[in-house]
Length: 92
Image (tube, rainbow, N blue to C red; front, side):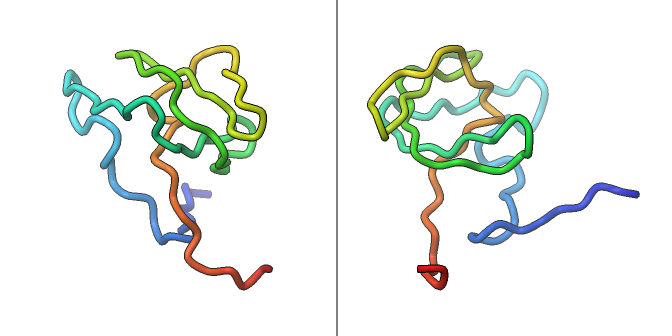
């Protein structure tokens, strides 16, 4: 069985707009305070409700919006993306 690409609510994933395209290319860091989604390490889904607390060349520190606490640990650049707004409200 091959890899399957599933489009999210905003369409297919961009092809590397936030990640380096070539080895050695510098990753454009998100600014502190930027609202972000985080990839769930177990299911691979994107979860919203976080902001960048600190950006380093290697990883991000994140703050949870619900209780304003900084999460322990660091998050790799490829597991964090700029928050995507949902376009429809059909489920409400």
